[in-house]
Amino acid sequence: MNVATTAAIPDLKSYTREVAERAQQAARGLALASGGQKDDWLRRSAELIRTRGDEILAANEQDIAQAPEYGLNAAAVDRLRLTPERLEGIATALEEVVALPNPVGEVIDSNIRPNGLEVLKVRVPLGVVFFIYESRPNVTVDAAALCVKSGNAVILRGGKEAFHSNQAFYAILQEALSDVGLPEQAVQLVETTDRDAVGHFLRQSDKISVTIPRGGKALIERVAAEATMPVIKHYDGNCHVYVDTAADLDAALRIVINSKCHRPGVCNAAESLLVHREVAETFLPKMAAKFAEQGVEMRCCERSLPLMPGAVPATREDFADEFLDLIISIKVVDDLQAAIDHIEEFSSRHTEAIVTNDLAASRRFCAAVDSAAVIVNASTRFNDGGQFGLGAEIGISTDKFHARGPCGLRELTSYKYLVQGAGQIRE
Image (cartoon, rainbow, N blue to C red):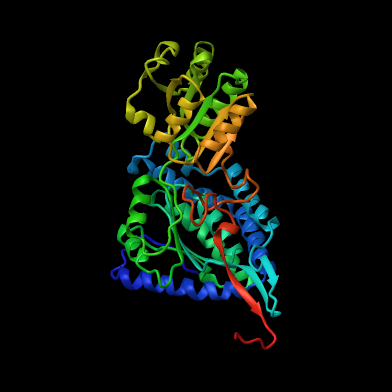
């Protein structure tokens, strides 16, 4: 069993090539594996996570202890931290993936041509996924689960902040692969945190089918610039909640607090609040009190600033920023169109929400706002693979090709055409 270490690797080019070649070979084996085998691996992995929870938590404590060395803020430490409850959630997520239909082999479309040829459009794995992520160790398991279930081998390159936690999960995932007779190299953890290794992987388009980065903007910009294969990504999660003149204001308070404060360090947390001018004087003082209870820093436009005790003036940069912390930008807008225009200017195309009881307003918002998820009368936190019924997700894409929004099993597949003939020739 290959457990990663932080030891220096003298020849990164050769090392990364070997990893990619092993992944490609494993992908060929996975393409022939049955859905039952893959589900057995998911169940066995969940079982091992439950029985070896103390081992995983001890490894995680090492990472938490080192967090100050990496300058992690409170929200980042929260993303990094594992608890018995979170471990149970990770194991349960694996079992939820078991319950999802196996996408491989699904017939997407079919027809019989006039000459008798039967043409099937069939879902197939992408092949090898290079997955780069930062300080959320649960993502190690989520990504591996979705890749293997969809028939893909995965190369995992986690952040140094979660190195020990990722090692612990990786050992379990590989043990489970061996236990059920699947290729152990179907899941590989990169054995170094050297940033140069990433560049070597990104140049291997002959071995790696797709790269998926999940982390900060700088990481994703680097991957998009250097990758020689397709990339599924989102740069930012500058998510908005717009409180309309026809909103249920009590519901709006709950929705905004949940969107901002439930887990402020994740990409579907709200970063900007827009409020219609006709309800601003009633709504914003109440909102300010709720934010104060939660310790949220309020950065306000000129019109909202006098209505929110304890707030500070917002800059233009604040409206464009993804804070990933208990900070929010706030703006009073004249009408629905002004809200849409603001979102068009500053949104990262991730998640936007409207709170309104006006059906026409909600329909216009949904049609005009061009983001991966547009939500009516609910929290932005629902833009999530599990919440959408996809099971665990490998990330949320703000691209339009090849996938958009939460990326689950089907988003990790492509298709090919299978043609059955009976001796036909083309004339």
